[in-house]
Image (tube, rainbow, N blue to C red):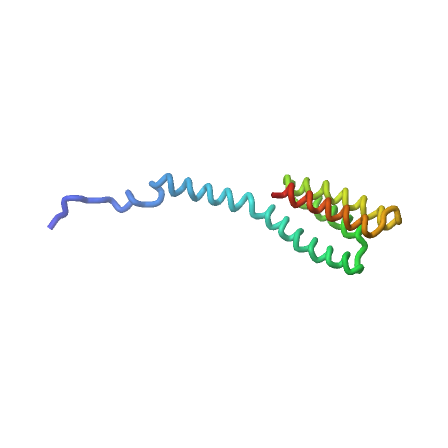
Length: 125
């Protein structure tokens, strides 16, 4: 018995489906390009949260927090988010130095810090 339709097995191989390969290339590009930068920023954020808690507890000076933050940010892969965070870190470092030289009160420092951090969050959205 012979069948009327003979379909070659290689007709349905994945090599013949350009949409499949196009999707795979797109997926690899998205995963390959965004992952290291996102991971680096996530790691920085985790470090920053812990270091900020230390500064709030008095275990680290605020200026030291922002100096370390600046150093860590400059080591990250370039991105718009990195640039924005660097700008704010410089502002926060300046305000922290004013606090530590008694040019501003702790209350003024807290207000300015909150204002700068609020602006940062708005810019990162």
